[in-house]
Length: 190
Image (cartoon, rainbow, N blue to C red; front, side, top):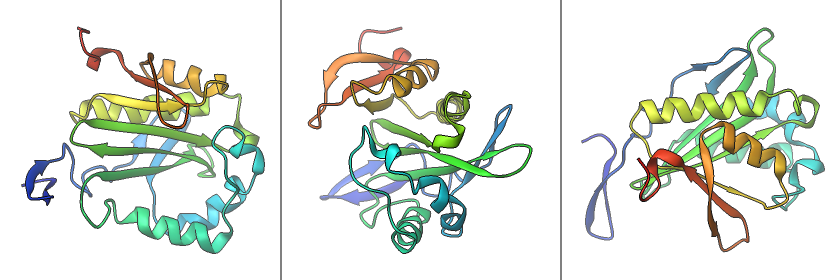
């Protein structure tokens, strides 16, 4: 069965298998291209920027660590198959240049979304376009509810989440981030 596995002796079914998301998603100005280990070379200069960690903490990875991370993500699932990791590189439609990434961690009860666009391409609507394209594709594939965890001072990501059809739930996660969720999938919503 697609996306099926065993976790702690309980059968479970995920809405997508580890390869079902591997499609190119086309938007007006960007393409979402399934991540591979080889993308680390293009993405290192985009992500090697401390300002991208303002709201998430941490430091940029070195080139070797990024390549190792991409190798793990390319598998599409952790060893226990408890979720599916869908990761796309955001590339400009006209040049193919890598400008960021979008990702969804897909579990039995929906997906957690995230997006990062390199500093040089911010404030041009690329994050919104990419996040909306990913969210639309996931909804079309039957994945929901969609969620994002956003630092309360990250107004840019809040606007992206809103454009992607998410709304604040009023809940805060363990890291102090606001939980946003797709309107149609919230308890008591139509």
